[in-house]
Length: 278
Image (cartoon, rainbow, N blue to C red; front, side, top):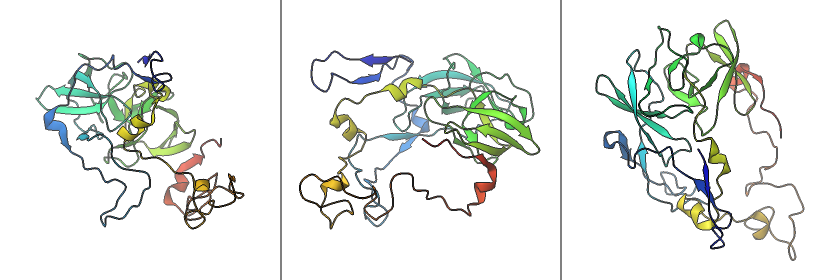
């Protein structure tokens, strides 16, 4: 998917790069697969702010995505490729032969008019968009939308351009190399979808102006060193000081490289190799 660049007619247009949306085939979602989505503005159920610098943004409706892919052995035709404001990837509308309609994440190579299917007990073609269990997918194949618990639905590798690689299989588990570089064991009965998530140029977008960040619901982020000592541990000082200590959050937690993962986390035994350090 190409990136569209603008001529520098204004300061905000000078560096702006946006998606060309050439792959989008329909404007507006399938109404039966849409539900309301309320913006929280960073507040919890008590109305207290729990996440800073959130608020505003363009009103969005939520598209119900089929992450489980549990409609087995029933082929579906790809009707449209659509934009989803709730995620970086594109979504594809499937029309099943029995009349049901569902949304899935659109991988690279999935086109309108193509057919996809999912299965747990039958062999399928290993082409983008088809879904099956890890035990039937060959080694070295790119996959996405991977389950952590069988039947729960895909929760890993769902962002634009992401893919995981099956490295090995041993016993009940498969070794997967995740986009972060982490190597993890996942049960062979977990479902996964063949292919790499589409919209790979998402990482090359440049917003160009502060207003586009506001459209996304992100309010201006105030630096800690610009605050007073009563507001932030890094605040205060005469003139423009750089803080003088280690970068940290307003509540004193170190912000650069401090490990917060619990040592006794149950999933530790499934992680073979940690993600690469930067």
